[in-house]
Image (tube, rainbow, N blue to C red; front, side, top):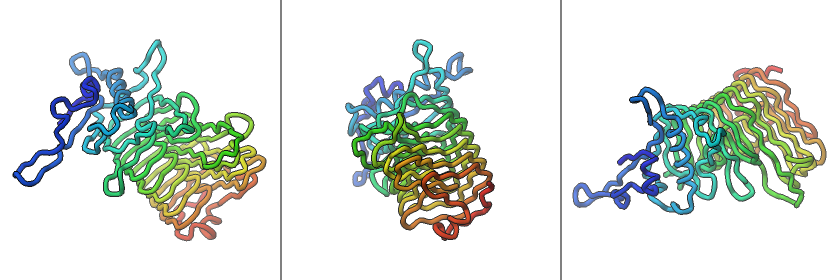
Length: 382
């Protein structure tokens, strides 16, 4: 069964008369689930000669609003049997109100993580403006806010998608360009390019905050069961995390990476980062750790990295200024903990790597002291 998103939303996100059907017996003994599809895009005008970008972009907004809706909790829309399919390119610059582009909430921005299947059909999302979320209230910033499957046997999946142009509207302290947080989720054949300044702002709370902030070019926080395969990031202006005011939040750790801010129990393979303007943390009197890496800010336990190329990366900096616990910066990782695996990693043409009030991990230092399994195909060029 398949429906377009506009009709689906008009019917209150139900599959019409088939909404209550979940399975059908074919032999009188066994039953088979009905798999459903909801399409986004593919609308044209002038007898099919021109793409209707406004209608297509509005369908994406209906997708995000529907998924985030409290009224649809537990609905058939979110039961894991539905695949969302992109049917054409979408240029979000056409989605305007009173001459201004409309910012769209992340899919899975709040307590309802995206848990289904998304097939991008190798189409492109262009010029998307994402409404930055208040992460202090548990919301997540990215095209997808939080992506989380039920378990390792029933993962969420997003694949075959391109993104050309993305900005945040407003300020957030954690997230990623594509996804804020992930767990039990597979991402494959996804390509991002021409991304403007990706800046996360520490709200500088001085009330004994604990926990951590994170930001990444693709994913902010990659948790257990996440996998990333055949992904590229190209032409990012810069990736930064900085205080909103004079000081950082008190006693909080900050992780920032060209691809991922923080990883644990995740797999990364066949990934290319090219033309990233820089990865920079500015921390002032945080009292915590700050780690910046060309690929990952903090590689936690049981993270696996293979076939990863980093090319033409600007400066990687962890600027601790005053009163920080540790500051670390690295061409690949800002800091590493636990048992991890690194294989066939290539670092080519980097800017300065700077850790103020902390440590700098050069390729030779990492290979000999920390990453015993690391195979540097091309050493870092200073």
